[in-house]
Image 1 (cartoon, one colour):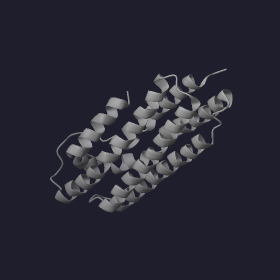
Image 2 (cartoon, helix red, strand yellow):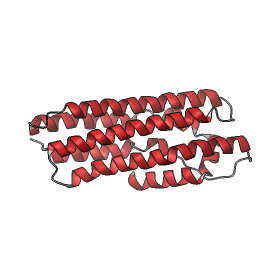
Image 3 (cartoon, rainbow, N blue to C red):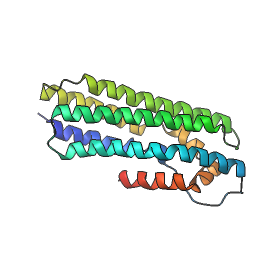
Image 4 (cartoon, helix red, strand yellow):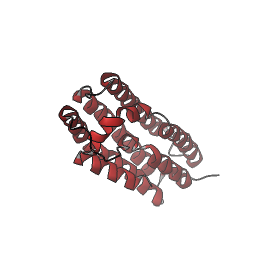
Amino acid sequence: MEGTKPVNKKLAAALSGGAVLVLALSGCSSDNGNDKLDAWAKQVCDGVQPQAKKIEAANAAIQQQTSDNSTPEAVQKTDAQAFQDMSDAYKAIGSAVQNAGAPNVDDGAKKQQDAVKELNDISAAYASLKTQVDKLNTKDQAKFADGLKDIATSLDKLSQSGNDALKTLEEGDVGKAMAKQPSCKSASASASATGS
């Protein structure tokens, strides 16, 4: 029978694979000096920065629980809080993208709306994982481990799925404008540091 610890390690591995998908902000090159787009990117990046830190901290908390001989209660508490934090963070990033308006590029409004929907869906998925964790039976080690395994599977699917709209939003000039923003650079750097 698999104990809680190896399963929680799977949870942490799945998490680090997907938790920071919104921060795949890459590519540094000069764009054509689009001031409107630069202003948009600054607004979004400034909104993403604190949320990226929140996601990173939640990820680290789950990693931390896997390295100790944690009780099921402690694992449940930590994981539930981490999922709640991630849900809140993705919702806030969605709001940041929403509030910034459409970027000044072709199909900007559609790209923006698709990304906001995707961020809200990710937020809802983490909220659902929190509910699942809250319901786990911490008194029965075997049932708890099985429950964690299901959550790790869901998390794995979540990390594989859906950041297509975000990638689309960050293509081309939008990505270039975001890459120039100090707040996006630091968010991206910290994301890649935890993602390994």
